Length: 106
Image (cartoon, rainbow, N blue to C red; front, side, top):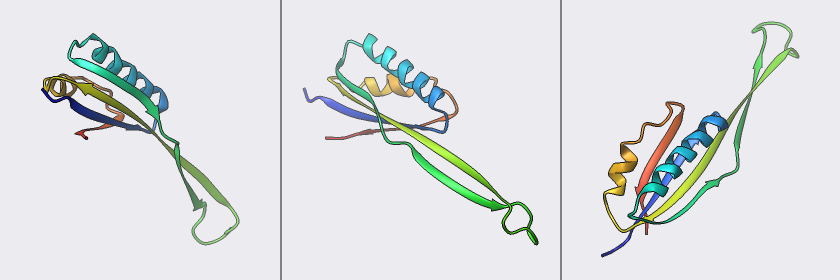
């Protein structure tokens, strides 16, 4: 029987919600008997995007506001001997502020 290798990519603008979702996933996976190995959550560097906006459109060009968006990303790799682990992962109820991608790799 071939092993199933699954990678979960989690992204969020809030690092606390992201850590909570990673903990929830790892708790569910440790309870499964078909999971052979779990690697992660592996943190990726934070992506920062800065914006500079003029406060008034016609005068005072030196008066500006600066905004920043930070995107946090984590990856969890799973090795399992059953294809049913995908159904378990899809049935999880994660926070709405977290974007998830689930795919197989070799």
